[in-house]
Length: 239
Image 1: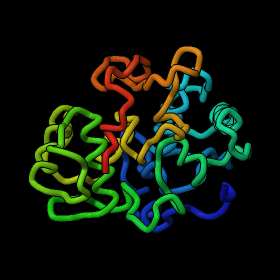
Image 2: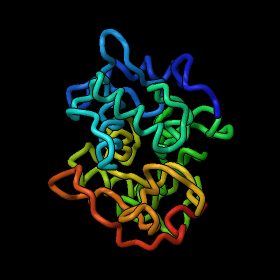
Image 3: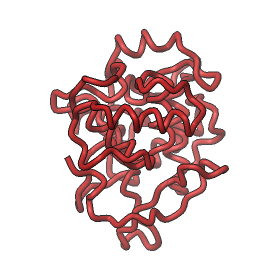
């Protein structure tokens, strides 16, 4: 396990994107920087996504979903880290992001981090593979398994996702589309297996059933938890 300390994971992207405002918050892509308690309290879209991911687990209460990393969010992060056997330091770095379902730092294996660049037709890479998986989870089907190549079918799926959520329909995956994909999809950020633990493989009931849970993608209450009807067979994470 790498220590959850240090500089932003993607300092250039984080600094450049912070000038963008989404949902009344400075845009920081989830996974682009370490999240920790500081003075003043950190604010951003990445904090909001963190709070939603913590909230959906029921066990952890980050306080208001306001995009502000305050004492309640710190306490929820520490409880989350303890629950998953991580170093309990209250800092969201590579190891904690990984269990939250987001590949960053050493977990990227040399691939571009999803959200670190604008994606459009003709591009390829591990971040495109994640994009395609998240679109599959969102119901905007990409034909066949994710390939890592941004083809015309992927463009159509992106446009369908954008239209469904009232975004600018251009088929290009920039900050607003990336933010909405990460906010509204809970799977697809990494490959899952029977030994994987984390928010994207939440076990239901007595924590021994192996049931996959997810947010209902189009529900009025974005924090409601319901069983995902799809089988836990790995089909949604095929490379």
